[in-house]
Image 1 (cartoon, rainbow, N blue to C red):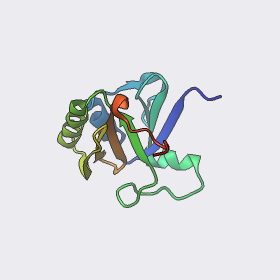
Image 2: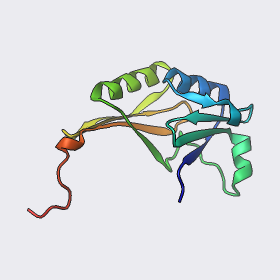
Image 3: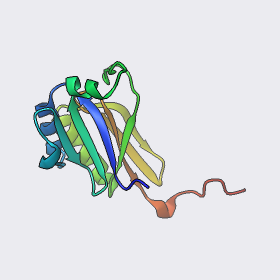
Length: 139
């Protein structure tokens, strides 16, 4: 059974990407970081491998999509509070990211979204599980 996830994303400018995510407070594992790739540590079990596009292409026979033009994945990360969601979005836009969707407030869940400089879409979500409606419960 898998215990960790490594998300691989193509990037056009590795230095720009590492600067952007460092500015959001993420660290990078130097053991898996060089001039072709950077390993961003999201948590003890979640890592994002940012691979220079030409290097990324060596792992697939398919064309590499341009995340600024199409979406294949939405990356959602949790936050400890609504305020943390907003702080992350504010920092992301200050660092060169862009807003691609308006915030959504569902009462028990609050989310807001940004696109990184390569166009990958990130959702920052705060969930108050104590106030979450019971899904699937008969009414």
